[in-house]
Image (cartoon, rainbow, N blue to C red):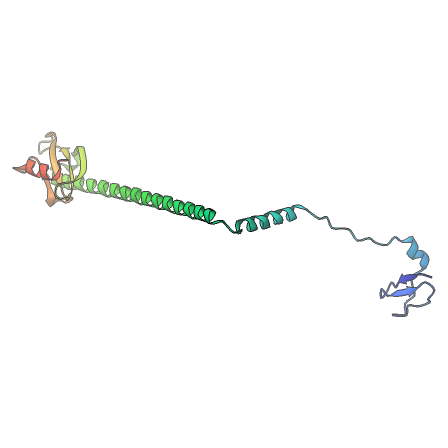
Amino acid sequence: MALLKCTECGGNVSSTAKNCPHCGAEPPKASAVSSAKPATPQKKKRRIWPWILGSFIVFVIFAGNRDLTPAEQAAKEQRKAERAAEKAKEDQADTAKKAARDNEVKEMVWVEKGKDAVKARLKDPDSAQFKDVYFFRGKDNIPMTCGQVNSKNSFGGFSGFQHFVSGGSSELTFLETEVKDFYKAWNRYCTK
């Protein structure tokens, strides 16, 4: 006598029983059960790499959290302070570079503004030719554009290069040929 599984309810049924005592269904035939192989569940493939990775992460966490000796703690703090000091130096250098670039852009804009002011004072502004133009803060720390300009006169000919000093507007622009003591202004605002 053997115990068989009922095909209807899955309960245990004797091979000699006429009906299943649980549900009343006919029991499976002993010959049908013995000929059929019982289904073996497939084993899941176990991968080892997640275990290795997990073990490594746990090791790193525990290794990083172990108690440090006072000397190791002091060295760690010193490295941290050195990194902070280097970062502060880099930030300061970046700030200085940015300020220098901003200042350079402002100076270029000021030079163009000075050139425009000089052109406004000329007879033929479209013929203006500039050379040796630069930005300078004179002895009084006043921003000025200094240089030389050549342009056509009333007769259509170039009159030759003359020095100019410009404070950025037509009223604050002085040409060498228009001012009696021009070189006093030049020495005050444009002499490096």
